[in-house]
Length: 151
Image (cartoon, rainbow, N blue to C red; front, top):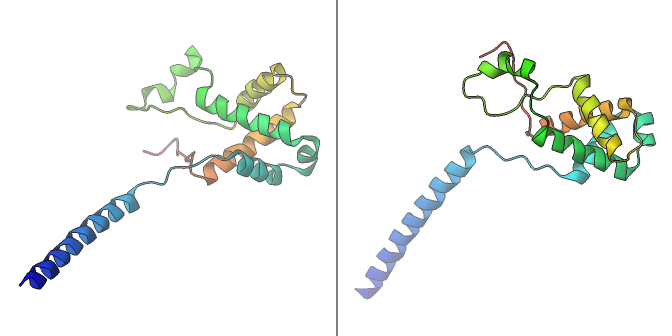
């Protein structure tokens, strides 16, 4: 009789544990995987993507500093100018994020920032690194392509 109670208890315990593990596995499987930015991985990706002359002219420390500065600019960049705030992005319903674009003005701001920090780089180098870095961020899922005309 005691053996039957122990066996039934073990079976019930196994069924409950399997149910809990299964439901948690399904829940975690539906969640979006969070992107992880790794400096060494980003530097390697960017060095392979930029033109050879630009990659050859940048030292590893300069490239890493550019990547850090660019990531900081994307995260904590300057607030939109008043004339930009009145544009289409301002009336987006509940939009909490910022829009990332590949224009020359953001590369110029990054260029001024790294020059203030004492790095001897050209605007062309900064623009190439920033563009390649945006590709890396898209690849790891940190940036999504948004259709400006879509819903």
